[in-house]
Length: 270
Length: 270
Image (cartoon, rainbow over all chains, first blue to last red; front, side):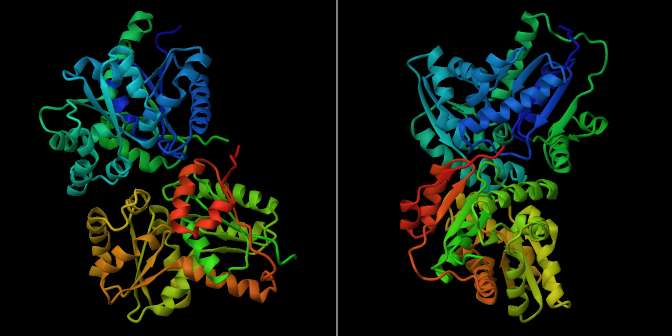
């Protein structure tokens, strides 16, 4: 396979850009094709059947763009659709849940781990399943935080309202004396400051976006698929709706020139 | 047309149930078929093109169920798709925006009206357009409140966080001395208490759900389409995803027996 082919990254919306950012940092020579399903966001409260259907459609789109690997940069889609896509796709497929789970299992000293995420991710219990595959004795406590995504998208990452909600959401986890919290939703790294402030210095925060980029690097190295440093990558961003809002959010997260040289295209399914 | 045929009501999700509730109160003999597009919620941040496409699909579904009228119980879809559906459907189609606008125009003493809603509804400016068709001299001030829907769906209708956000969202409207505020999103009647508390007793709140049911009554009367009181209506509720969550929310809003006798069916498009 041509090592200069792009990596496909998809998410239910803008949140997956935190994963793109980590890939850009750790794998600066790779070209990224991003798909944000902004017309059908959020995935967090949808059924497994629906998430699998959407993920399949997006994988088909990315495969037509000739990607050499696919990263599911959405916790809900990783929880529900990873195995299906791994079975059906002719290229390697990574999710964000396994790398995050592995890091949490490695990092926890007291074996008490909290996972925060959307309803869907928490209900799936998949972080717990993966963590216990590595360390069966560990206790995992999940807590859905449905207001965190809209708070981030309102630009209230450091706001008193966000602190109030974080206190409420984290309280049951802290009551269980967790020493590790997985930021189990792609938006949550942007709330890292508030979560760290509320959780206190004894709690380690795990960012699955960072761990996923690390795993991707290992995978590409192992398969001999790392891109050669022979040109500046030309990333492409697609959304299924609302390109303008996407662009604004992307510019606040990614190095600006990435977005400004390659305009966001709109691709509507069905 | 058979007067015993049902009325079709649709919304992007659960919010439209506030409209259903008003119709049940004001037109207790009518049978309702509700469609909540929970798989594609929210509509508030989607483009006009997408909203029109979704609304058309849902109208087709309701027409196949042989409805005698359609109520668009979603402010965003009313703002974007009302005219299209009125042109294309063989039955009368009502939205929630016009009735809400008419009531606001009638009720305001000082001619300064605030409209709160989703990004889409506020950006469309349609409440303002309709209000000024009736009273051209009126000033209309819009304010999007993106956190209100997730706050309602989190069950925080009376919470201090909601009060904090309401103070922030309403402040610019109150600074313009509005004497009327339109609750321009179907979820917002559930925040009536907090909005009234923050806005103060001088401000009148307009509930478009109530006004829409009133207009529907008038329309059915005028067209000779009012249902005869010859049986207990058997309402039917459809959602495109997550029937269980829908049922829980519906039970908190509607008279319980409505939901418990007629289970929620799931209908997935495409």
